[in-house]
Length: 640
Image 1: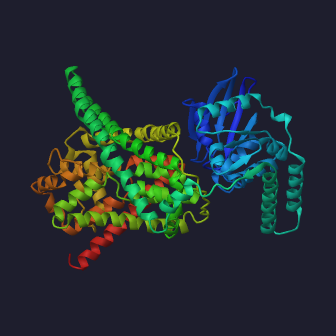
Image 2: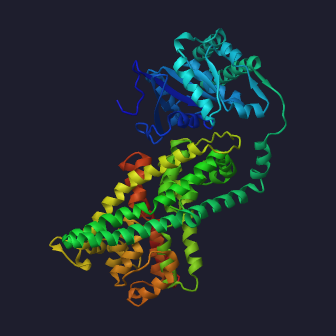
Image 3: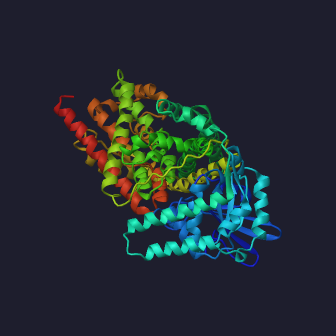
């Protein structure tokens, strides 16, 4: 058994939390378990698996936070996980967390669980939100109506959630059974299922029966006093306004990207980069040389290991800051509005409204963009998003575009770079359409959305979510780029006869082989081939590799230094290896071809195997090859 699974022993109370999305379930889980959590994936899928531990009244408690779901019809990975887990594991307590301010929608899952013979403790969470809306629930009457224990909580209050532990340790579900009303409902559902009606008719009647039961329970146990429009409704009139919604959203995302890549994240990343690749690298090199370590070992440690790990670590501040901003926005309830606002536009691209966030993140870095696909509802949407976001112009591709634009298009550099962004977006849209109608045709796209009320995020939850996502990038992606960095060092310093100059290395040989693929593209030199190979390790290394291979040392990989770098490279004779047209074709290929190994490793993790990582690497390479070929050959025919 997995160490993260709930273990039901005499000393351990096994608890599972279930409920709709946005009901505060994860907030309760984080309050109860704190840092005592294990985060992973459910077997065979990329949906988060969260297991936490705590102790109360001398009793060890193991808690599973099941994925949020609106139903248990087993149509989505989340639904299948929830019903399979609840039916196939022996649990002491199944806690159905319900949003007290949206009872009718939330109790639908409660009724489904009771139909499956799963006794539940109903936790009416967000009691404060309900009271502000004039909603009051009589817990005793609801207990009588369902025959199940009912408690109230405020998930953001640590005092309130701690009281839940008293309920957990003091509740014995064997003492409860469904009420006569629920038993009659279950009998009616079984009667409908056994009838000769069509499946659609059966389904419609069962849904009607469920809501009929919910209506009778609410009539007995719930009173509503009108208090006028609440704050969320007032804010939506502005933030979700048909005219202002999109500009406001773009402004918020602009602020998020500035916070990440300009104001906070990038300065930290630059400081970390300087600390690792200057101070620590110099220290390590001097220490190793002083200790009499062989030159090849010094080079391996400094140019391979430290440089490789450093490349990953310098991305970490950006990842953490970006995920913090997105987790904070999600906690406010605004992220659901973004999906609602963008759904009509995203539908034309073959995705639902929730697909906009991974695409937006792709302009910063492909790794969080691929990871961001977890938020999408259907497997089809997740896979399509994972496969198309690497087409976008991430920050690592920008130095390539800026360099070539400054060198070969000095009078129109900004327009040329902008065209690369447009090409990336267009190809992502085209690929989404094609993949959605071919490779992932069988997966249905759904868009079930409930707008939660606006609220101040629970910072503990925001920080824990940020840490979970950032740690996943650091551990998983970091190991892959570490290995690739060492491999590239070996390839650029050795051939089959031993140590050698770079132009005689295995990398040069591989570059020559690679260059044969571009005979009709205008950039069939071994240097260009070697640069593209190094770009698979990390796109930034394309510029650095070109500088080294053409004899221009200390070439900057920063986009803002592109003009100075271009002038340096022009003096080395690189300009004779490219024409303006072939340089443009090279830029397009660099924009569209195989993602870097960090992104590939993330695709393997998120898509669930080597097959999809390989598919992504190959199909993007093929598309890049075809598009850049067409651009070069059509350009020649037009006289460019």
